[in-house]
Figure 1 (cartoon, rainbow, N blue to C red):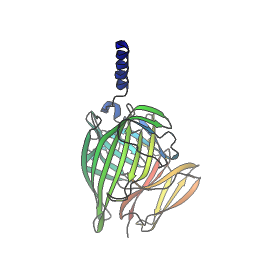
Figure 2 (spheres, rainbow, N blue to C red):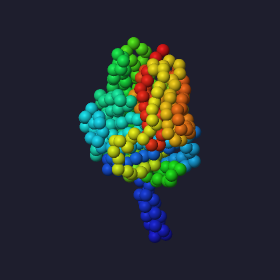
Figure 3 (cartoon, helix red, strand yellow):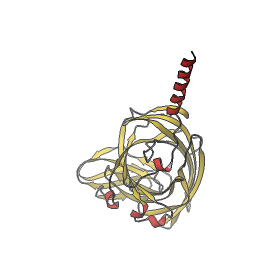
Figure 4 (cartoon, one colour):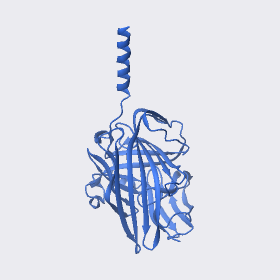
Length: 339
């Protein structure tokens, strides 16, 4: 009997060891120059699942509805590195360069370049602090401003992070048993000279696995602009990693031209672009920090000139970026929405 109990205790201990919480570090989580991640946008009929240990998240049957790519560069290989002191990594996604400090202590976003506009932050958004253990929580506050066409646009944001769950994640590409989930609640306020400000709240869940140097899955919730608004899934995406030798020029394989009118716009925005061949294309409207405000479904566009109409009457006044994204590249252009 004692021998049997010893065996059972040994089995119990070994089982716990194989299911111990995952600890994230800079070595196993930071982006690596040369990596490319293909983002597979999926239907939003998903549940984030519970918090806690030993959670199983099953997204294996998610239906793909779009595709984009993220390319990782060393900061000093990009044209704008000097504007973002301390940054050593830049990620190119949908026509935007996101600049990070990535070291053994943190992965922190310090600013963005979008549509030719440089936006260094006052402060930084630390997506991860290392080592990151289950239950760790941290907060960051940033602000930014830009001047365009005589108008100053302001952004203030507070982010609250917590490593709230760990366990097994199932994706269409396979299963990982060392998954970590980090939740971020964002409160932001955008305003411009001469116009009322706009408050927003959203909630994002990131899943990380050891050795995959970007979130392997994200689910983004919106609350329709208030703490008490109805929370709904505004976007979800899982990622597949490849590795290439990159140059900045490699980001330019995209549609040939982009014409957006009227600009400024009040009701409808017309997006006109030329394309050689045939490709699935996603068209999105983002804010200046790269967060998607509105997205058209993935559509196969044919050779020649294409035109798409985007309704913007419900979009708050401000400056945005229209992005036309293929699997190979992106073209983008800033637009202003007025009333």
